[in-house]
Amino acid sequence: MKSPPSSFFARLAALLLGSAGGVSARVVVSEIHYHPVEEPAFDSIENFNPALDLGEDVHEFVEIHNTGASSVDLSDWTLSGGIDFTFPAGTAVAAGGFKVIARNVGRLQTVYGVGGVLGPFGGQLANRGDTVRLKDAAGATVDSVTYAASFPWAGAADAFGAQDRFTGLNSADFQYKGRSLQRVSASANSNDPANWLASPLGSGPTPGGPQAVTRAVPQPVVVGQSRVQAGDGAARILAGNAATVSCVFSSTASLSAVRLEWFVDGVDSTTETRVTTTMSDLGGGMFSAPIPAQGARAIVRYRFLADRGDGSEVVSPRADDPVLSEVGPGGAREPWHGYSHPAGSPHAATLWEIRDATGDYERPLLRVTSTSALSVLPIPFDALSYGQTY
Image (cartoon, rainbow, N blue to C red; front, side):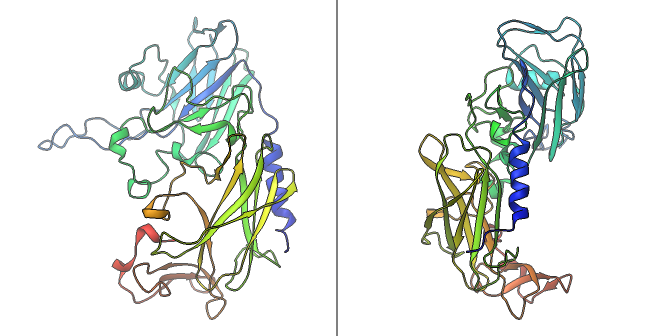
């Protein structure tokens, strides 16, 4: 079995090593709510006037936490990056205390029933990713976080990461809240995706209070993963060719029993045979395992399991990552990575396809190739099943 190209591991190693540094601070950024759930609401059916202007994520907030044993004077400290805010003179955060800075102070205090919120801050926390930088009165950076809404960060903090029809949730039940990014360890690296979890659905964001999960050392997460064609390392895995699936963890602390679970998606079935394979330890938090060759247009789904000190569990995708397919027993929504096997001929140039998932699985609805911009096949569009599109 040929391993993935060395450049792949070089990129993953760079990402892994890049999270080894960071800022160690007494006052840290502890919670970021960059994309609250804000569904349209109206004053009445008759008037149909917006009950609230929700055009700019008005329920955003940033929370900071004093991890020290004494109060800290925040006078003239600043938040910068995607947002701008200067702490007023005389502002202090008590030992072990929190301060919340909001885009709309009144709204946040009303929604969460908390007081003492600071703001408003200028600017906006970008939904796709941004930086929040905390500086002291002398302009020195005290803490800095650069987050993202995509892998390997917790995508559910991005207003759940997908529309309700894909997540199975009703956003209206979480109006004005949703899920925030919550810090796990005050002493661990601020920019490590492993150090941030999406707040639980039940409790939601917790402005001004402790996080739902705290640990001295964050549990490792998968920060990079790849699947390539075995033998030549090609990115496209053609029918009749095995694949090599690889991943790299943010750390190896308390990490053991790393395994790959995979199955061939039958599209209309939820009882496919699942195979679990022990992954080879390549060192440096990198692991790999093979998946045998499959037929043309087969969809292979896979995920990474490991013991991180609390027993074997699915590590990647994260348990609360957005799910775009019902693939589990009984139609359960389970997060999986995946790839498909394009036919080797006559469509060797196929980049991706949308296929009929209601009956004749072998017939594509739409095909994009490297030689033609778009190819739409004569099959009714209503044959497309969003829940099973790959």
